Each structure stands twice: as structure tokens, then as C-alpha cells.
Image 1: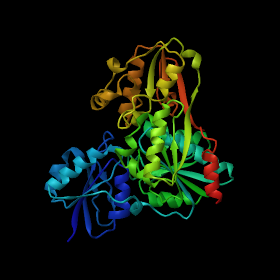
Image 2: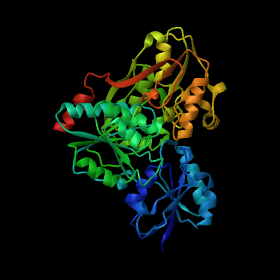
Image 3: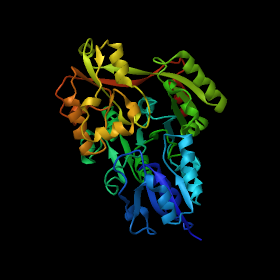
Length: 438
């Protein structure tokens, strides 16, 4: 008998799991995807052209708030959990809904969905959103380039627009960002790679993406999203840890899986963390993954106009996902503001416009920092309006992109960037070089 399936996701891992595990599997019939975390991704369809011959009309994408109703409506046999950066207890709440309605609940084992590459693959993942994996990925690219090898990055998917147009995306210059109508979140990941002269792919069909990337690379770097596991089978598996959130490596899915699979564990941000928290992380990694090499690293801040900060009232804009489902209470912008003696970090909440009101209602723990939300043109307009409405002297922008490329800001703007920096004598370059040359 054919089993009816719901795949729970957030427009990323769910599509990949479908493509590699369910699309051509006659045992299953996927009746819908459910969606969460990202605004406005439900109410669409996974197109029939991408879904394959068994799904000529495509597959609907529905809010996961309707999970119980959907299981009963479609007489679902199996619910497959396929998104990341969620507490273990919340995963089990979803499982309880499924099993109470009579459906099985499954998390697909990480290796089952890892595609094989003809080229060496270095993966960079994390135990939570906001650990610093993107800057680590760029450092890995720099190291591979220094060894005289061609390197191409492949980024975890962020297909929030037209899925057909986003099947395979290649970014090599700023014009590509506009051509693909990238959201702020996408630009945050692609723009820094372009700035360093690199090439980065993303999209929906990661088999096709991999084959394209292999044509112009000696080494492929998998640049993970959230705390998801790699889509490609890695030859070297690097996982980044955050000592500001000690304990999360044991309580979030699938971050704990990443910890237990990694070859190299990078404890980042040690320059701004308590020494005991760093040691606690080290002990946890040693207990759960005794064979992993542990490296200490810093998230080095680069402030383009520090003199504007001293004594100023500042609005701090941080990376969006880090503050929302990443649950960080502060980021590089706050650290930079404090180090440069600002008079006040201005609370943006009295000045919020449009969709940002919904963001703060959903994530009230954000507090007095403004996330760089921009999943749609409407959100980008609301972000611009909120910044310009806020009564402050200076805007501190710690998102990885140059906001002035897409927003008109009516106040002085100070950019805060962050880069990977070793804090161990035997650092990432030495460790990675040994493995690549071994």
C-alpha cells in the first residue's frame, strides 16, 4: 500500500528530503509540505516541474499550525520532520501531535540525504543559528585558495521566491543578487563571498547544483544554514559552537547531531565569552565526540567609523535569523557599541512599522535590538521606515551586507563586520591543511 506523507519544513531541508528520498519512491505519496519560521512561504506550491512525474499538479505548502487537521484530512500515515534550529522538546511536541492522530513520525538519518560528490567536500555547520559559521566558511574558502585550489561554496537553501527560477542559482557578482531578487537574508550570505572574489551557489535542487559546482571547483565548501546537517557527504566536517549559549548544543535539533558527527569543532567568540563557558563546551564536546579536534576562535570585529559611536545614541541593527529563531540576545553590533562607549542603545519598539510589529510580537525576546528583516519587498520597506523613524544619532549595522545598497537611511550609518580569527596555536588553517594534504 502507498503511504500518505506530510513533510514538515521551512522551504529548505524539506524540499531536499523530498527530492532525494521521496520524489521517485513508489512507496510514498507526499500530500503536502507544512511551513514555519519564515514569513509568507506557506500558501504556495512546490511546482510540478520540480516535483516529478508523480506530482504533475505540484504539492501544496500549508502552515504547520494546521498539522492535526491535515493528518486527518489526508489520512496521513507518516509525518517527516525536516527543518532545523528547534528545541528537542518542540520536536517531540510535533511528534506527539502526529502519533496522537495515528501517523508515524520520522526524522531521516543524516547520511541518507547526503549526496556524493566527485570532488572533496568540506562542510561548515553549527549547533545553532548565529554561531559564526558563515565567517568560518569564508575562512575555509580562503585557506583552500591559499593552497592553490579552485573552491566554490554551496549555501544551504533559502528559496523564498519563485521556486522554478530558483532551482539552480549562481552568484559571482552584485548584479546576480539583483537578478535573482534576493532577500536581505540571502544577501547576508552571498554578498560577503562575492566581496572576497568567490563563487557561491544555492537554490532548490541540490543534485543539479552540485554537478554545476563540480565543473568549476577542485574543492566544494558546504556552507550550512541554521544548525542543519550537510546535504553533501563531507570529507571534512567542521561544526561551529557558541559559548554564549552553552547547553544549546545538547538541546536543539539537529545541532546535537552535528556535534556528534563533526571532525573539527570550532568554539567561536572566545574573546567575548566567559572562560568557564568555553571550558564547559570543551568538556561536552569531549564527552559526546572524543575524536573531534577542538579549535578556539574569535569573531573579530571590524568597525568602519568608530569615532561616530562614542557618546552617541545608537540604533543597533543585527542579523535577523540570529535574533529571531536563533534566540541570541545580542550580536556583533551590541558588542561594538559597548566597546566604543555609546551613550545609549535606543529601543526601536516604539518606532516599529508594518510587518516588523508582527516580528516583535512573535519574538518578544528580541528586546531593544532591530533584526534586519527582509524576506519580502514589503518587509524591506518596513525596515527602512523603522530605521528612519527611530530617534537616534547613529545606526549601527551589524548585518553582513551593506544596507545602503537596498535602503535609504537618513542617519549616519556605521558598519560592523566580523571575521574569523584563530585563538589556538594549532588553528583552523594548520588543521585543515593537514587533512587536505593527508
